[in-house]
Image 1 (spheres, one colour):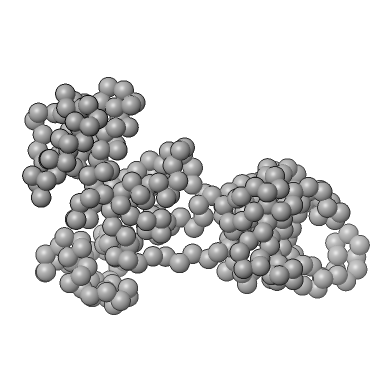
Image 2: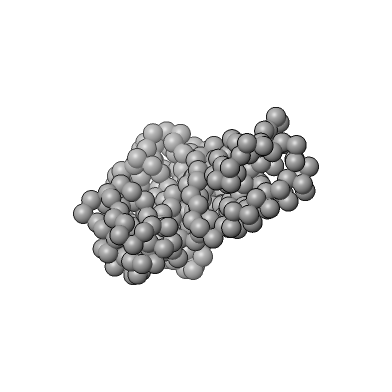
Length: 296
């Protein structure tokens, strides 16, 4: 395997024209696992070639490799997963990425070259309880984590669970650090003082706070609607639509594709309101449903 790794490195460096940049005092371990030793980079282009070379090698290794990766402006989770020989669900699960729209350039990700979940061992857990929890064989976990048969995992240590993923909810609340000021259902309208069915929930936040897409979807309306004020409507899968009302600013356009967690507008007071908040609705085939039953 070591001879194969060195051969791969020399081959890639020949292709990239980087033979002269190989450090002559390397070890095979350094070549694969130490980013700073095997290439002497003097430009951004060299740095990119070095990174591509390293990821190419790592993606082809049979043993598990875990490393830190800085998310770039041109990246997607798909391109990062492909680069290291894993998949999007693995990266989302290990980094607990509930919404792709929450990613940003510079974010540090933990990536690995195998498909599955990097799990942090909790107090009072051991190999056998973890194996039972994820329906795996203890020996399988020892093998994939390159541990001897008598190895004991400690609390706070990480163990890789192959072919295991976190299942995230399709929808999330569109505001952070918020509270509900008006529930779904019958209520006395705060302006007209009449009994009226509230087709969504009101979420309290400061004026101008970022409003995020509750789920992946497509913008089917972005403009003014009586009562709602500035309103965005997103169309989702399975007949769902979501409404975001009383906005101060709309940041998307009709026809635009958006991702869960992506900023689409800002909290405001437009339409029939008594103060800054977000009116949030979810409809199923055109019929309003309680957003809390979909989000939680």
